[in-house]
Image (cartoon, rainbow, N blue to C red; front, side, top):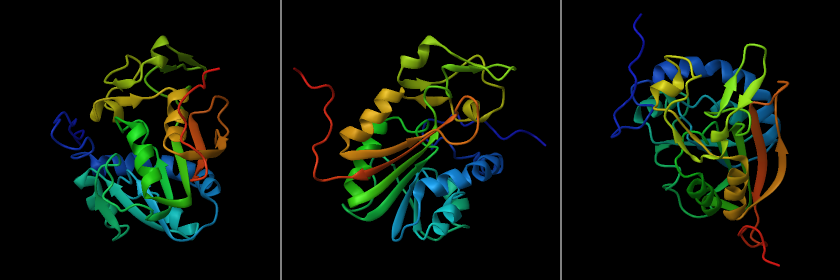
Length: 241
């Protein structure tokens, strides 16, 4: 069987053309992450926006918490598969959401921080479309120990290279395997931990809980829970004395 093509067409969504292949390889990560994500979300009701829902692999996880998932993604190919799992999906950009203010009780960003070019804009859109007091959960790549700056070694150790502070799309890293997801979608966006957390705070979301799920000796996943808090001002960096 031939490998699926690499998507080098800048006019298309990065996952168009490889949606079925990606759905297959992502199943294992979904199973491994399901319990931790369920715990992070906790029980709830109402509409849950699944940002960058891809093929809809996490719809059932969201449903089991009592919520109704509403998926949004830019890839028409991925949404074609997502519609087999739910009728409630919309094509759109997470940084320019096609929804009205105060629409959702919950929003979830699952494995998307490395795929969006402006996480700050995504955070602002989350805050805009969440109802006051609404819950936002982030579950994805740990910026410190998983990414283009991190080289995994056979003994389980990881080497963090100086490019950790380069917040940008990294198109290639010499330790990435051939034919993997990063090669097929043209790399990944890396955002350092401090910048990621400040993007959430600056959007007007109050971080209430941070975790490093799973039992890996060196965590590969970062998770957090935040709330839209209209009683506090948006963050603006360090205060001047």
